[in-house]
Amino acid sequence: MARKKKDNPMETEANGTATAEAPPETTESRTDPPPEGGNGEKRHPAFKVGPIPTDRNNAVSVAVWANEIETDGRTFTVYNLTCEARWRDASGEWKSGRQYRGSQVYALMYCLQRASDWICAQRDPQQAPF
Image (cartoon, rainbow, N blue to C red; front, side):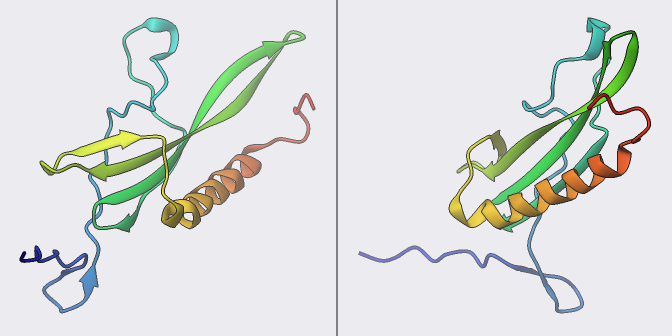
């Protein structure tokens, strides 16, 4: 039985350097929280890392969401994270999920570290409730 030829996981640019094809940025991801206040406006993340390609057909990304909470008469911003895995199915369409391959762990850790650094930079020690 003949083996199917595998596609080259790297595409070549005009200058001869190899680059991995990144998944398209999506504004409508299933990991997006629902619109705030139900007013029909789509929320956008306060900070996003990725998508980071892990191979030709897979990528990971992390989004940071800002949420205002009120406690003891004071209002604070609390940050939440969503992690997303993207992959290309057999028909070539990009799909989203929350499961990660072992080979994606390092890219995911990178995204989480960048998000953590951003969140720490946003903190105001004078107003932190904890």
